[in-house]
Image (cartoon, rainbow over all chains, first blue to last red; front, side):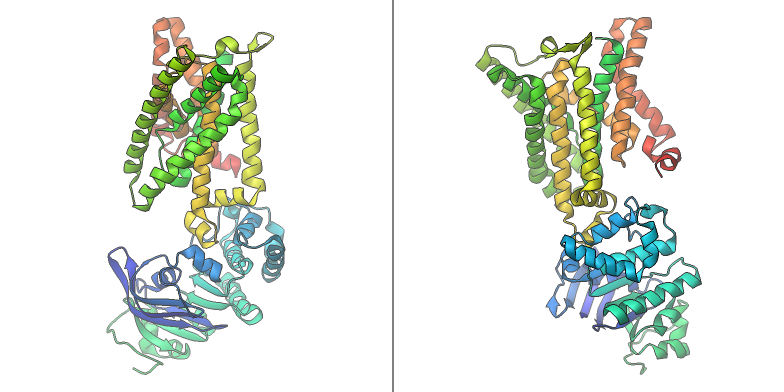
Length: 246
Length: 301
C-alpha cells in the first residue's frame, strides 16, 4: 500500500530521516515506535508530503508520489491525522465531516457519512457542536471519522491517544482495529503509548535517531529488554536490526 | 447632514472596507495597503458611468463590485501569489502592496486627467452629495450604506455557513494545511478572498463620494482608518473588521466633532489621529483586538 525506499528527508536543510525504508501492507496495522526525537512523526509527514525529501522514493499503491502535493495524496486515498490541529475548531462537527467529503458527490458523501457515524455513533448527538468545544476523545473520534468519510484506504495516525485517559485510549485502539477489520483500512500508526499500539499491530518498526533500528513482528519489541529500553528514550548503541535478529 | 448620520455612513463604509482587509489578511497574511485604492477605483467607475451615461452612482455599486473584484483577482495572481510562492516575508508582501498602491494612484491620476479632458469637467476631485436623494431630511447615503452592510452580512452568512465552498473558505482560513489535507484547493479560496475583498472595496468606492470629496489619492488617506479598524477589531477574525469599522468610524467622526466644539473647526482635519490613538490604546490593552479577548470568545462560544 505504502512503501518508502531509502528516504532521506527533513525540514529545509535539517535532515531528520536517514535511509528510511518502510512498508505498510494493505489491510494491516503497521506501527512505528521509538524514543522522542527519533523521527516518527517526521516519517508520517514525509509519507504525506509535508517535508523536504532529499533522496529516496515514496510509493503509494505502486505509484511514485515522492513529489506529489498533500491534497493530491488525499485524493489518491491517503489520510493524515496529525496529533494536534486535526479538526477545524471553528467549524461544527457536521461541517468538519462535510469538509472531509469535500471532493465527494452528494450521494457518495451521504453514504460515507452514514458509515462514519456507524463507527463513531457518539458523534450523532453532537453534530451541531463546534469542534473547538469537544473533549479530547471526541475530537479524536471526529478526526478519525473524517478519514472514513474521505474513503481513505491508508490512515496515517500521529499519536491518536496522546493526552487521553487510558480508558479512552483503549476505545481509540479498538476503533483502529474496527477500521482495519470491518472496513479494510490500512493503518500506519505512530504512538507514544507503544505497548498498547504494538499489541494491535501486524508489523512494527523502531526508529532511533532517524534510522530504522528494527523491522518485523511487533512481539520482540514487547518482550525483549534491548528494545523496551528505547521506549523510555534510552539509546546506548545504534545498530540496524531486521526481523528481530541483532 | 447630522453628525450622527454622517458618522453612521462613514462607519458603515469603513466596516465594509475593514472586513475585506481582514479577510485577505487571514487567508494570505498580506497587510494590503492598496485596499483603499481598490475603493477609489469603484469611485472613478461610478463617476465615469455618471458622466458618460448619466447612471446614478448608487446603481454603479454592482459594476463597481465586479470590476473591483476583478482587479483584486489580477493583483493577487500577478503579484501576491508569485511572491508567496517564492517565500516572501510579510514585510516584503506589505512593501509590494505599497508599490501596487503607488501604481494604482498613478493610474487613477492619469485616468482622472483623461476624464477631465473627455467630459470637460474636473475629475481630479469630485463629490456626489449634490445628486443624493433624501427621505425626510435624512440623506440617501445613510440608507444605502446601511443596506449595503446588511446585504453584505446576509450574503456572507449564506456563503460562509450555507455553501460547501464557503465552509471550505472558513476551513482554509483556520487551518490551510489541514484544509489541503482534506482535498480542498486552498489556493482557490485565497484567490476568492482577494476577489471578494476588492469587490467590497469597489462597491464602497461607488458610495464614498456621497460622503466625502474623492481624489485619486483618497485610498492612501482612508487606508489609515481601515487598518486602524481591522487592528482594533482583531486581524484574526472577519467579524473583527466589522466591529472595528464601527468603533473607529463612530469615534473618528463623533470625537473629532466633539473636539471641534472645544478646540475650533481646525481640529476636524486631524480626525485620523483619533483612529490612531484608539489603535495604540487597543494594541496596548488588547493586542489581538476586540475579537481576540476572552470576553469575546466567551460571548461567541
